[in-house]
Amino acid sequence: MIKVAINGYGTIGKRVADAVAIQKDMEIIGVSKTKPSSEAFIAVRKGYPLYIADISRRDTFEKEGIPVAGSVDEMLKIADVVVDATPGGIGETNKAAYEKAGVKAIWQGGEKHELAGFSFNSHANYTDAIGRQFVRVVSCNTTGLCRVIKAMDDAFGVIKVRAVMVRRGADPHVVKKGPIDAVVLDPPTIPSHHGPDVNTVLPHINIVTMAMIVPTTQMHMHAITMELKKEVPREKVLEIMKNHNRIGLVAKNTAIKSTAELKEYVMDMDRPRSDLWENGVFEASVNTVGNELFFFQAIHQEADVVIENVDAIRAMMGDIKDSLTSIRMTNEAMKFTAL
Ligand code: NAD
Image (cartoon, rainbow, N blue to C red):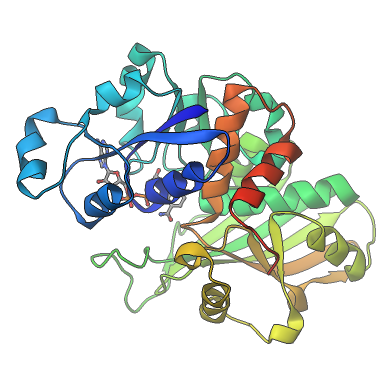
């Protein structure tokens, strides 16, 4: 069993913990929090040993009835891999501790590519992650872009990608962040960082991205145009998407045309936390004009990277050598069924 620690039991960390806990070849040996919170209580309820970064705060937790298993350094000593899901920018301050403990570490998209020196996407570069000590799982938007670009590139060849990201303002529980009533260019300059981030995984892709933030918490929406190396009927594109195990087609006959309706649909499917792990490509939007492909896809920011972290763990441990085996194992454990 691969022993996995989660440093930073928040939005992403708690989801990765639950996903790891149900894999046949992995176990959670500990999760960490910095202060008592609703998530700390949930970790205890789920039976995850809770470690804390600053052990001098042990009393603060125990006073609230939250048992503390030890310090984060102690957690690192018994882990094979630590998934660092601390807020963006904090993760890099943990690198020295991971080096000292000799533990493998995975950072998230809030950290720079250079921190790990390798950016990961299950379908694009699983085998290149085999045996690595440090890996970064790219952000939610970059993950969604990489999946679909890689699929189209493998099938038809991609000349260039132009994409507009309409990003959610904050995660649903984040009450102090906006915008409440504005569309914010983020950044006002072009390109946004998403294109260069895709190039950390797929360096040969010609991509330019633009991004804005809108007052919603549900999901991001991407408007994507791709120039392909040949003219392709839309049915061919739909077939590739339909057969892809991490691209979900939002069927035209569901009449879903918003992130809110899609979230409700996934909730009705009884997915844990109503998480959409796959790209939600709107079938009705998929169109080709000559060799240009157009479509909209919804990306659930809290969910799509979770399953990528699970595959990254397997790749780094090196026992499962091919991506499709790991992807299948992960999806099956999650009881992942098509949209
Ligand atoms: P979050 O704020 O929801 O959770 C972070 C957790 O880390 C919190 O529980 C916090 O208490 C804990 N923490 C803070 N400092 C710590 C420390 N020094 N040691 C241990 N724990 C500490 O953040 P998040 O949204 O889960 O983001 C985590 C990472 O995932 C970031 O790099 C982010 O960019 C990336 N990411 C976030 C999303 C998203 O939409 N939420 C999507 C993809 C990737």
